[in-house]
Length: 251
Image (cartoon, rainbow, N blue to C red; front, side, top):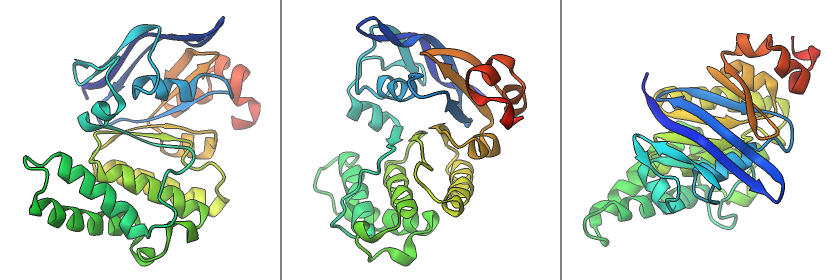
């Protein structure tokens, strides 16, 4: 594998608090990576920094060899790094189909040589139907998004992210607030999507069953610092991680 995303000496502080403290991380192409740590560890701030939502005080973000440290969020998305949020950002009054179709249409329009392009409409329709079937929402395509279960709402948010054809998919607590059966379903879905679309997936998660169940590499943040990274077996037995976050019950 080769590096797709390199984080070099990334630093952000608010007042006297270092939210991310000189982070150095290399994410490999095709990797399924989890980021874990206690509340306040800097996980979501890290996502905000690498996606251009907030600027770092120091450091560099390199995506496929290109410096994107202070690039605008929409430019970063166009390059192929796309984020689904902890709270699903969907159009509640629109149908499931229209949520995905509108995102697809926007994507194909922006990538067309001519903004008004008939092929964009055809491509968006085909892409929408493909995503709906692949993500498992075809059966509820005519429902309003507001009528979906919490779990399906999160799946819809991921589906919208997939319409942008990402190379890196960032997920902020994809199973937050889900019932146990929904979490199991989400685990299987994310693993399937990661493999099918050949994604590099980075997810923040507090559900350790999911983290240890699907992540190939786990990275642990504590007080803005990376204290450990490695395979699930390595992290499970890492004394500093056990003491700072996992506790003995995960062993």
